[in-house]
Length: 93
Image (cartoon, rainbow, N blue to C red; front, top):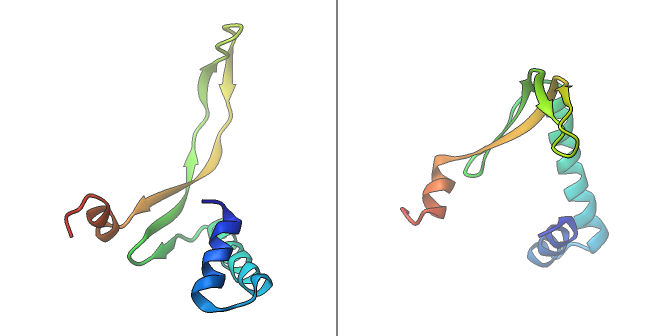
């Protein structure tokens, strides 16, 4: 599923015009990005938690030419599904 599929699903479920549904999805994603950039977690009850985590630099190796190099420190977004959703996926509910 890609973003346009999400927009179409929202359009069908809510009766909104395509442009309105697209704007809704874009605003939601922008709010989530801004919240994560500000160092806050995004918790969606029943779905899970998005977090920004710090990864430290580490050694790496180019598999083509076997040269060693340092992978720089960076921030990554992680997602942890909620227990409720994990149980639904695994058929426990």
